[in-house]
Length: 202
Figure 1 (tube, rainbow, N blue to C red):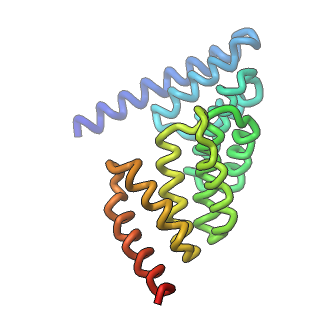
Figure 2: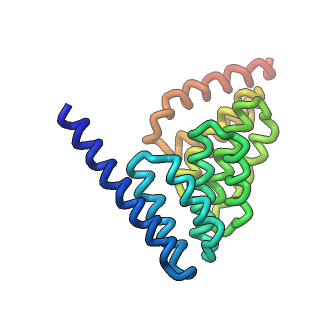
């Protein structure tokens, strides 16, 4: 009970901090407003106040001049819409993020879009998006996103019954991300791929 009260107190403090930063944004010069909105959003997120976080991020993306921070803002907004079940708005936000391709956030946005396509059984489209992520080995592709994208690619290929390519990606996944909790499942799927491919050899 005490822990719950303490957590509520912490959230209330973050909510007050978010409100203070939001108020500051309204009174600051235009050049300083974006930073205040961003800080407000982070406080609201820490307070688990998604509604207010959405509101200030909507203001943030309208005025932020820096491409990297703007892409991060669109990604955060897309995540909030997605968690709220607003798929249409989340997809629009993710596409806005992707319009700024020179950041790691664009690949994270693509990953969410690929997962959404997979859930809708649009496997060809999901594979296409994942391929866009995995063929970019530059500094914009961070390791956690690469790991998640590679695993999603194995799932998509298995659903497509493309066992030859699935086997290649599964081996890559197991070798490069041995600490991933899905490695045991991936090993089982490697066995399934081998079994399916063996059917065509006899």
